[in-house]
Length: 480
Image 1: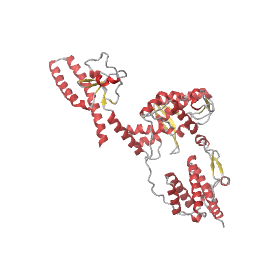
Image 2: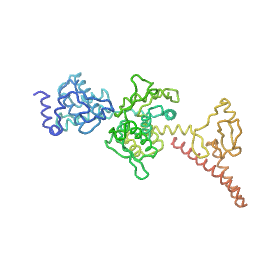
Image 3: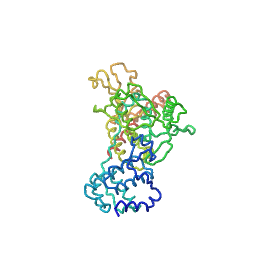
Image 4: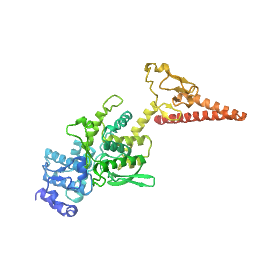
């Protein structure tokens, strides 16, 4: 009996063969994504078909189809199905090139050699999944123990602060629905596929609290997340847009629709009328808009290099902001919809790098006790900046224009432009102690107006000292 005939007999007698076998699919070499139940994912990722037509080994082609079918039944993503088929097709090419054409030729050593040829986590995981399935069903008895692959730390690409500022200034260049989409993605930290799948009626209100319904791709479930009322207003704006554009009773059930421009518009997409269609957005179309927006807005990093946005930049930026604000790992994972905490250390590392940068650059404390790097530019007389800089008894004056008369003369502690640094801490502490002595004397003498004024000054200084302590703590954490 030929290897293929033996395999077919094993399949028929297996538990999977008796319960989950779709013989009509196994006879086809092209599977339509829509027929597999992936209509929406097909549109999002532009995956129309899954192809099995370029296999040389008929037995491996059959096993690959069964693996794909099992993946469909287990409700994995369409992209996962495509990648598993692709890696098994690569295995087919490898086996033929090495002269291994029979099922019995395949063993763990050969599989390890194939994985090592292009050692990636995805290739190894997909081979491990397939081999385990084949062995459990009794189709092909194989043992494959995945080896530990040394992976490079993932490149966490976030939007630099200066670029984020440019984006917010130019966001209105985008068609209004896409502007709302990316603003919402940055707030929620969703994957772009999850944003595209968000239902039109995704809001619910309980008392004064608002919640939004999200699809969590890695966990394959829908969940409500509490949101700020301003985020709810953003969603309501998009819902109103759909009502006006397509009608409140139109059966399009997604929050975001497709946006078209005239063919060949290129970067002129922002200077022609956009056409909205009640269709699911595609990743390809979003990439077009983000690339066009990056050029039109002339996004530049601090080195003057062109910055090109991707949808995942918004998600990673959200993660980095949460890590920088010291949110708990479990909370960040829940917000981002991570299936595990594996990615969080990389965001933590990046947030510490940002913390170190801030500790070195943010060296000023203002009258509100806030740590800041803000130093207003002296727009005129730039070359005279150092000459015009004014030192005060307790810190520095950073008024943007130094040549005019000061309205807060002799009242620096009450001025928004006054800054102190750690170098001023000892003088501030000594002055604070002296003021406390003056306060006691004024109370003893019954000088009520002087008591009020000294208490005001003590309050202003106390806030600055607390800010300096926070700055000192920030620097210590970096060097621990």
